[in-house]
Image (cartoon, rainbow, N blue to C red):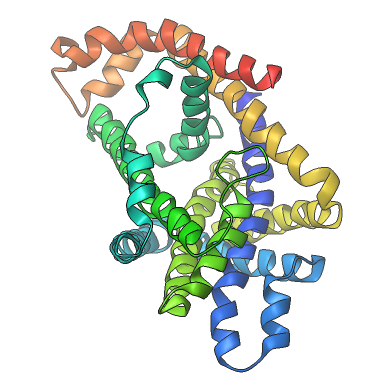
Length: 358
């Protein structure tokens, strides 16, 4: 039951995620089209329309399917090893460039100087936990699938710590890029605050505020190309992990070969994406809320209960000992079982309750 629910949620997340990723591809092409002297096409690429959304959603899903259909070693692993270093290199370059612009220091201060008055704010803490669910794709099976591809003698606690550290590091670097860039935009006369007085976020920030900034910067075309290439690569690495969930299930059940399973799953996702695009005002926000705010925490709770209350402790220990023979004498084993059994479900319930109340 939980497994099927996770597959459905992963497909729904990918259905709206591929639409947004398609916007990134369109904005990636816009600077090159503008330089080619095709203003009409450039405007079409940045204007919201169903044909543009469907075209670039399809292109993004085709690229995703092409990577996955090549297999784990020659597809997912190969391209992840290529894309992630490129992503980090472009991110570091953009950070250095943005920090040399007027106004960047103000954004850097806002980002790095903590506001200790809010450190105990329950809403802030729960929002951070909710963000962790989406950032790490928790609850929808991606971590389970990738975990199943590890060798039996891999150190599972170390692997988990590395994944968490890398995800947090990339998120920190993203903050070093986005917050200073926003205040550079403000220095150039671009509005960065909403009518409620909060900083812009989400699509308005990515597809309005920052493109307006790039137009005012020296070398803005190159910066825009790098920025949307960066976002497209990040989106591709995430989409690969989400589409692998239904593909992996299909392979395990011997229903179809990897290429057939991949393209069939991609086609199903595109059908859902098409329905969202054609009913955007009604369905987009609904699907986002249903999956990320409610379903992911609920699935995470189910998996947490299974791993700590249903799966016997000695079985968990035996699995971990394959890669860490002395784990039963470690600090990790003294803390993790009780923490995962009692604290994690309680925290997930709080995240879910906050989503329901909001």
